[in-house]
Image 1 (cartoon, rainbow, N blue to C red):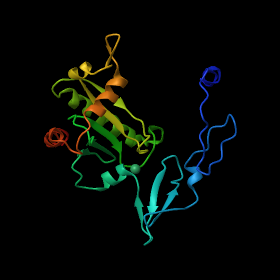
Image 2 (cartoon, rainbow, N blue to C red):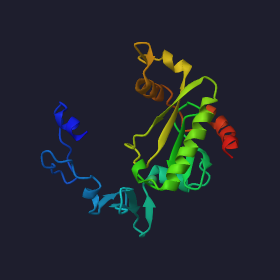
Image 3 (cartoon, protein in one colour):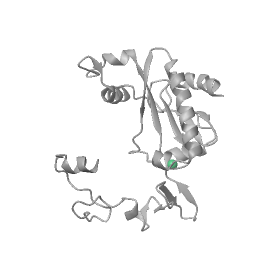
Length: 220
Ligand SMILES: [Zn+2]
């Protein structure tokens, strides 16, 4: 595998800079950006941002307020801490299933562990089992919604570095979108990208609002 990457002819790209502005030595992976954040602190709107290590790869950004208390700056941790969050469909002991906000696509669900970890490689056995079980049930449920032909499962962790899996319902009607077929075959990445943008809407569209109680019944 390593040989493949060494031999592969990749285009020259601007090397990533660390936060201190220095460049990593040639041929070396840029230092983990989180490592360069050990030094507090950047003042921002009256609070001090202090990026802490959790000791493993499950990195967790926290914000130290002036009164000395810590608040999380992870939108998913915040969502799970809010017992009345309207998007939550189901909570097992260690994993949550919630509806994706901001997109008018009922049945677009997300699975995420409560614990702030960045990737599936650091999940505990119990988290892994709960995620797999919930994923299977959720896919089965989404496939039962009208018009849904497939469920795309994706995980990026770029904008929100708290592990979460998108369960994206691909409907038959989506194939009519521009560029959504390549050589007559549905082009998954294009379909996902095009329809996420096309269906962008209020945080909780009416269609989603009315589906969530039904989903809660199913997962009860
Ligand atoms: Zn988090």
